[in-house]
Image 1 (cartoon, rainbow, N blue to C red):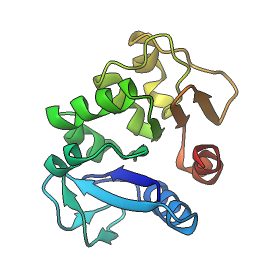
Image 2 (cartoon, one colour):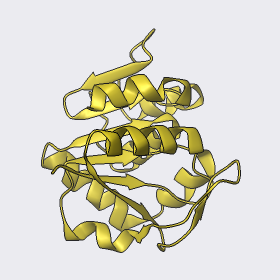
Image 3 (cartoon, rainbow, N blue to C red):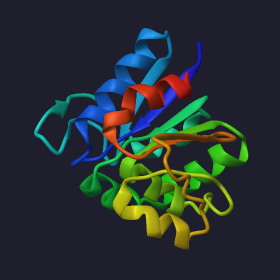
Length: 165
């Protein structure tokens, strides 16, 4: 069975999380949710995901897919976690799928894996991606560049997950 690690922190975007979580589960993936300290995590709209493993545990295995959920508040906390940033680099180096949506692309910037790659993120971080060396694919909702599958907005979560699958 293929494994998936979904990364969230308080302030994550529920729509992105719930669509990806349920689509991956429905396809038979073994999905594990990780957060900074483990336990309950509250989304930006107040929905609580009741069970997650602590981020430090993600280094115990190399998941087939790493899902980086957006949410400005969530990503601002996650990008300070050096272990997570190293894990994103490790995933990329191993050619594993990295799926980012919305502000999740900022974690790819932090991991320094965007240079020369076509990557989408929320519209307000277009310049951040370009300044980090990424190529912004104009007119696309979802983009696949090698092992990185990205989407600009939660409105495209279903299409994004179909590309991941």
